[in-house]
Length: 251
Image (cartoon, rainbow, N blue to C red; front, side, top):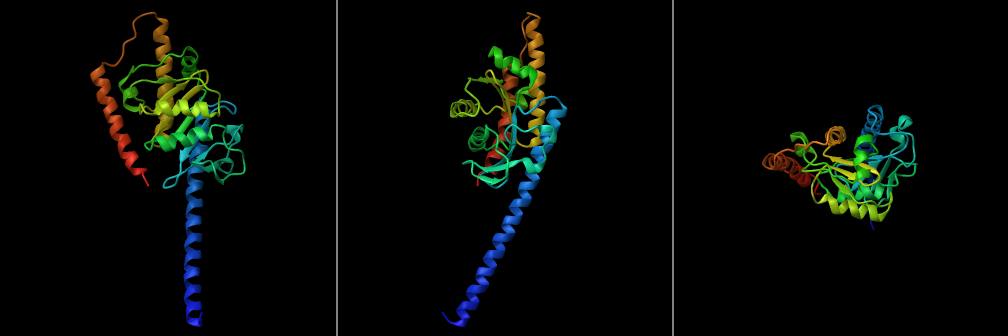
């Protein structure tokens, strides 16, 4: 190799190294933003009474990557900071984070892989939705906004132990209905959404539906539901939004 070739190779290697460094810096900045979103969500959920102690878990998809940021396992949400959040690939390879990731990390990864319209996942043990986790009663379409943002109904996902492949398979089987809220039998609630703000809204909407449905059942009178044609129109609007996100997340 002559001096000219060595010089050219040195320049090329320098360019490649600089490009890799810049990409790594961009990835880190991207991770920090998403980790902050997860932390902010957790604090808001605690303030509003949807997360308690260390129960539940929260994640946000990393844009442009097969990865997501998720809460650590068994850690107090009230003192959680972005430094505590874990960043994982869908195969659960750790990209960032010193703490042990949530026991439900594989479940979150499966949701992002199977629902390209979903950019945020919140699992809570919220009180009134959990009532239906014990009675194993789905919540029908009670309101227009429920059909528009949560789907045709809130279905029950059959019981399986937390953090197991059994639970992951049960969840994947239900995801095909394209709804944004589910109830995990003898466990809690699972809400999906296109972004953290809307997913937080879906958590609150689910609790409103659970509270009012429970109270309506207690009257022992017939519970009114959204008429089928209007439910279908509202759900079609949800699917239209979801399809846009499905295309955006294909990479």
